[in-house]
Image 1 (cartoon, one colour):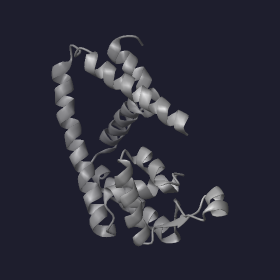
Image 2 (image 1 turned 90 degrees about the horizontal axis):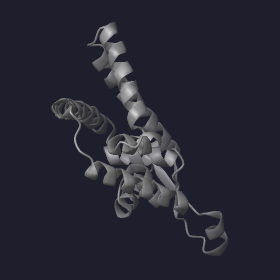
Image 3 (image 1 turned 180 degrees about the vertical axis):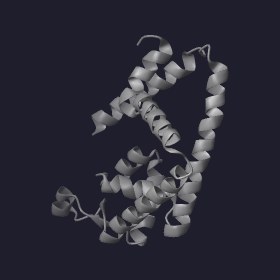
Image 4 (image 1 turned 30 degrees about the vertical axis):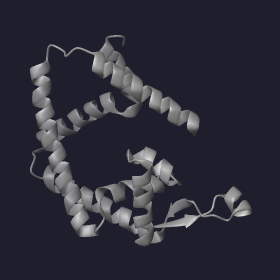
Length: 184
């Protein structure tokens, strides 16, 4: 695990260095327009999560942490890595989710034999229901947004989002760094 974290930290440093030392492309005006347009998309997404928060009582960070645990992060440090939170924030978020009954603690097998200390977390049945509800709400809210588009605009949106995701997802970050530095 530490080796993976170190590799990810190294890749992140290389990407930051590549971005910091690169020159803007000839399409800077278009890029700045896109920054504004994606900020509007981010605001729309924030509105969706604000609605989910009002309906479920779960903050976005809590949903992220709960999802991370559901996806296998069993310790607050793993939750922090998965969500981009600082370790103390992830620990506090896990504690809140535990108080809400959405996470529960259990001991690592080694700790159970030695100290019995319960430092690992898992999603409870109530946590699973909360995740399912929040996902259903997210889908319904996005569906209502897509309902305002015709089929052609919907297809175009999905195509563009797919292309952006293909270019920007973490496995492609080293390739992005290469594009920025001109070494790809």
